[in-house]
Image 1 (cartoon, one colour):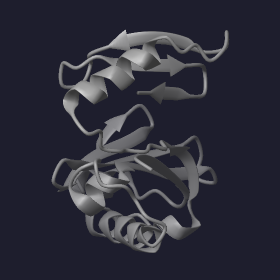
Image 2 (cartoon, one colour):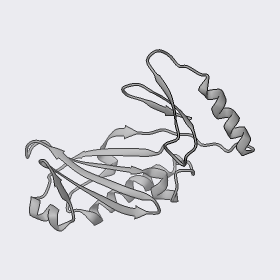
Image 3 (tube, helix red, strand yellow):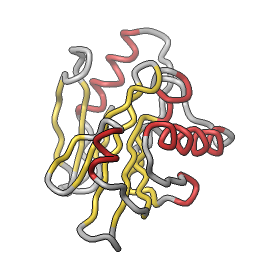
Image 4 (cartoon, helix red, strand yellow):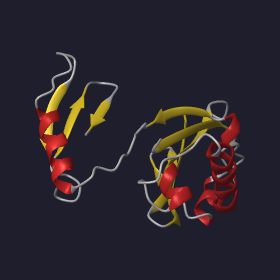
Length: 163
């Protein structure tokens, strides 16, 4: 698991309270980015169109929050601690009632990391992946958008796969 987005129905405080807490307004919604750990940012955003339909969305990288990088894998035993930590961080940085254990998960990026014996082996695996085509429903492309190293991507409207 890497990026996770929680969505929780709650009452959003008045604009004056949101402003005191460092939120900025975008249309009728508010947002705030909070640096909480080494490289981890809590992206907090409100959404809703009436007082009966108000939500808070919280997005973060779970391994960066717990381990300081997204190289270490999240284990099942980490999940209660992750949810408790996110709940505490939202409470410390907002006046918004939020409970991660009761929130809807609207985004969950799943990942698996493994070590290759050498850098040349990693490049060989990546080069082999260039020749794989899933189906017509996925578009494939090569990009060096992270660390100037080519990665192979496949995507459709609801999924993105990266190698």
